[in-house]
Image 1: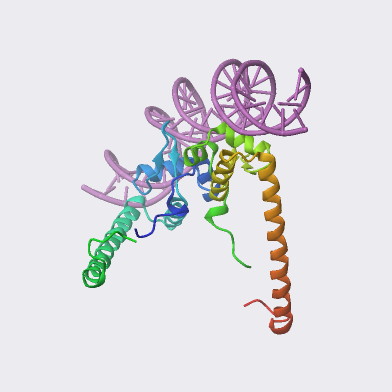
Image 2: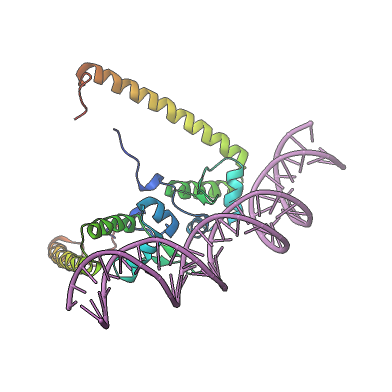
Length: 111
Length: 111
DNA sequence: AAACCATGTTAGAAAACCTCACACATTTGT
DNA sequence: ACAAATGTGTGAGGTTTTCTAACATGGTTT
């Protein structure tokens, strides 16, 4: 159901590749994680794994920092943006719920 | 011009992740490369780097092998398919060329 | 039977990654 | 003004991941 998330969000990129892709140092990348701006997954052995979405986010973060914004502030922005996104999601789902109630299949096998 | 290739084709995945993604052994993955079925890039240090497209291809290869097709045969199939694809590309480009000749901007700045 | 196929396994070495800690020049907060 | 926090570099020491090369093996071809 909905869209089964794709390449962009799969966490499959190791930190060295992220370094090459972004131009940031590994130190920076790890530091932004410490400041809770980015959340890689871990391999069983403990290596970090990032997605393309993470890579893009890192670039945005780096840009803001270059503009003098501190990690603390960036984090707040992100939380605000995410909260708004959640609200929007809820609204969308409610509307979808109304539609289903009116026209959706009731308890039927989903296709 | 045309479409600037995306996530699916970027070679950013190391062999361990490919192993986890496909369920194949590293031995198998390297062997299919030896048989010229797959072409990872290399990091400066020599580590293999695969794309999502590669991952999907690997799964297809593995399926065929399970069906008793040998690498040699798979390679031939792939070459055939690729050749056809190239021909199709040429045709498409020729047609595009005709259209440009008739209606395209001549030597102008491309917007 | 000899050659080839597909895969496992092992060994040793190199590359990549991890955490921790110290340093340092700049801000920022009180 | 000064203590605290920021952002980043660097180095040490340790673990994980990857690499190549080789040998082994049970099935297929030729």
